[in-house]
Length: 268
Ligand code: DGL
Image 1 (cartoon, protein in one colour):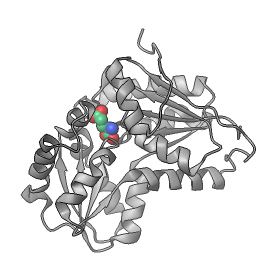
Image 2 (cartoon, protein in one colour):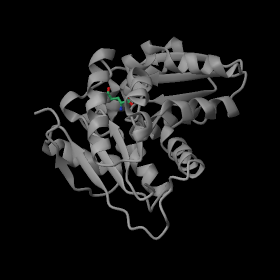
Image 3 (cartoon, protein in one colour):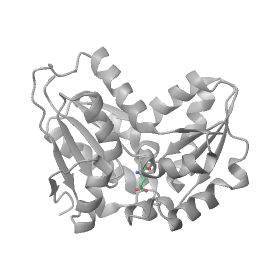
Image 4 (cartoon, helix red, strand yellow):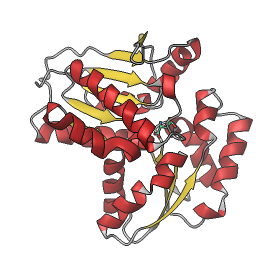
């Protein structure tokens, strides 16, 4: 079991920001990444639609013998984590990107006001609010759906005037006033983290899920005895359900290095 791969999936290539952190934190683990680019974005899909995609992706990752399935997408974590956990049952451990962040917030931001930006799906699901309420840590959450950010990033618009204008426009919204920290509640957003930090000029802590999720995955592997042995040579596979040149180009930006992106006909 231990040398089996870790399955990581997202609606597209945003989840590669998580995969990159996992690779850095757990260099001996093999990764199978699946980006459902045929259905991108998940953020404005119905819960039922996202759940049907997630079940099929879980089937694929189980077929590829993944010991863990990491839902590297906030929208899918919000819409389908409970279902995926039940569906996969004992065949693999299912984890999401939201719980590690919530636990981080609970440890570091008791009695503070925190902001959240994410897709429409993530924000309207109230999943962060519900999980933060369960902490009973007196944390006040202010949320804003930032719908333009995923298509903007997917189009390669970041670190330029257009992206800075859009980002500043969102961040100056009254709904995010008075926050102590801001959760980047979408796995695409690490790519615009520096622009967000520039806006706040150090007055607000910007919380990026990648390292927090990778650290939590490491602890889960260790506590379940699922970590691979240190001598094992990892093998990574990167699949997408719709293959275009622009995905190939963005993959390198999101993962931080060249990868061999392959088309996987999951929906044929
Ligand atoms: N990366 C996904 C997330 O974390 C959002 C992208 C999408 O809308 O598909 O929510």
